[in-house]
Image (cartoon, rainbow, N blue to C red; front, side, top):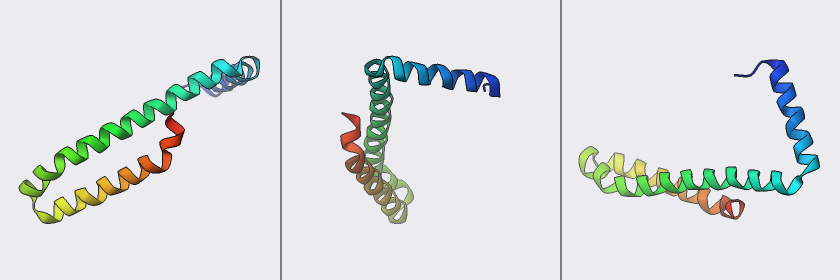
Length: 85
């Protein structure tokens, strides 16, 4: 946790970097978005893989809940796919 003074200074440095070297800042920003995309993809794979086990162990209701989560996660990935390139 940064103090208010440190946070203000960090924002000032970030703003100067964005203004002085926009290409470098864009590359850094792209890495953060790509990392989010990888986490969302990992979550989707884990949910899909756990769906059969969840249905067998916890019953149809839990399986149906897992299907809803997977569908929502897949929808989010589809909606934000262009931001991760």
